[in-house]
Image 1 (cartoon, rainbow, N blue to C red):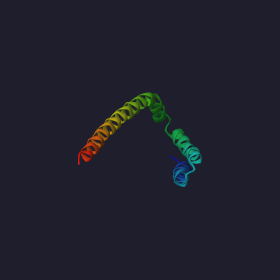
Image 2 (image 1 turned 135 degrees about the vertical axis):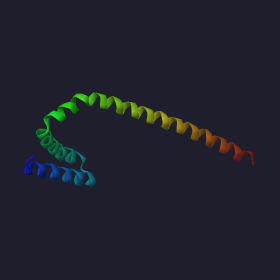
Image 3 (image 1 turned 90 degrees about the horizontal axis):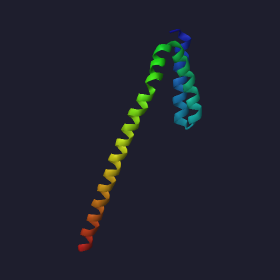
Length: 93
């Protein structure tokens, strides 16, 4: 990889990070996209493989989020039951 490409990638990552920390999300995405485009121009075969496998990544992420939501709702139900029991116990005194 040529030095100027490394510099563009490093500068875009650093700038995108700073913009995210400052709360300027659209600008950070734009600058990060520039660095990603330069990186993709250097490694087109790897990015093509990632692009082909992207649907499976999305499916796995969706399954993980569904599982996390089910666990969260179950924890919420248990917390409500426990709070109700504690309130009933306090009412007995």
